[in-house]
Amino acid sequence: MQQPLYSEKEVLADALSAEKSATTLYNTFSNECVHENVRNAILDCLEKEHDIQQEVFNMMHDRGFYPTPSADTQKMEEAKQKYQQCMQSF
Image (cartoon, rainbow, N blue to C red; front, side, top):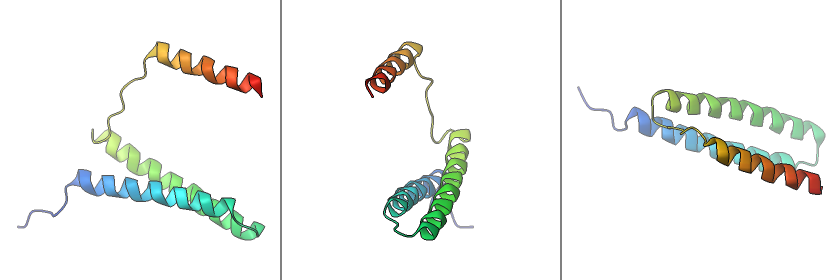
């Protein structure tokens, strides 16, 4: 029996990369649509791609292929304060 050419991690990483690229492109397309019906169709595709991206990300995270360390509480508070100040300036 042959060994697979790509590991599960490599396949999922490639899928995640493809989904990130797809969402970027669909977002750009939706921003540049002149016709409302086309824009709505593109936005529907964008939402579906985001859903797929989230599924792939969760699969990678659950398998330990995409670890996400817990955020430091102090850093979270600093970021929150920073962005609250930015919002107040608007």
